[in-house]
Image (cartoon, rainbow, N blue to C red; front, side, top):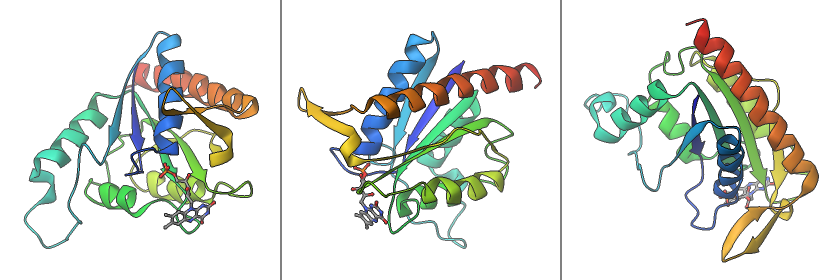
Length: 183
Ligand SMILES: Cc1cc2nc3c(=O)[nH]c(=O)nc-3n(C[C@H](O)[C@H](O)[C@H](O)COP(=O)(O)O)c2cc1C
């Protein structure tokens, strides 16, 4: 299975990015391949509905190609004012409403406080459903205190959150296998 991981953060030392690196490690341990996309490396302009077709932009096409090649996806976003980041929503607005073609998608959000909750995951669940994605049951809400810096990089550190992340990865791989074999 090929899993695409999308980050909603533009931070250099990003907690969402660190969470995705943990997911990537677990996906590799399970013998599957993955690729991480962030919008610092794949910038998309502000979506303007009446501008020349955004689907002709090279970076939109790259994103669409990566989604098409994936059997499943994980989207992780920072919590911004109780929801997903603007950069992530802007990227999704560039995509057609059939973009996720009934692929399984796992959601995670990272907040700045222990009571951060999972509201960005809930908002994303509605958005992804309207874009033909199949959101899996297990989602992950965590906060910056679940991470530690070592080797000059952020790493997911909390044991219970790691356990939940592992469950999410296994569920996503299973769903990806099931839905891909039915395609
Ligand atoms: C504009 C803005 C709004 C934020 N709103 C919230 C919020 O509503 N709840 C929360 O827990 N943290 C909030 N935060 C904190 C971020 O969610 C937190 O720092 C997160 O770990 C950043 O993830 P990143 O490093 O991947 O960008 C906000 C941060 C910014 C910059």
